[in-house]
Length: 80
Image (tube, rainbow, N blue to C red; front, side, top):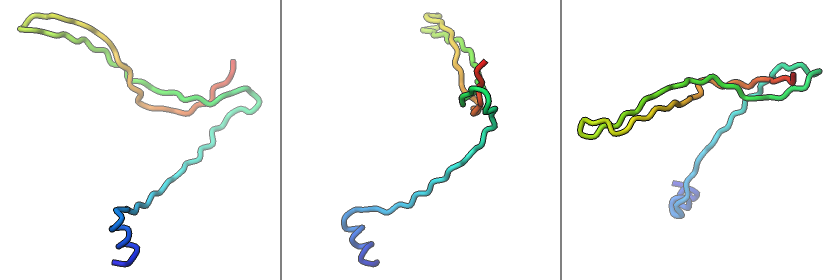
């Protein structure tokens, strides 16, 4: 073990390595029209019915829905 490792171990330090990546995207748009970049998404819409029973007797019943995003897109939106 070299001196750097001994000092690191004695002081309770740890070493770590990190790495990062980036992605560049060119989104075509008509530069002659007013536009803005937006986020669009497809959703899964789930409906549910909840029933609560106590000793075999229905004591509560409620219904509702939940929406979950499935896919997301960056999209150019133009002013009408």
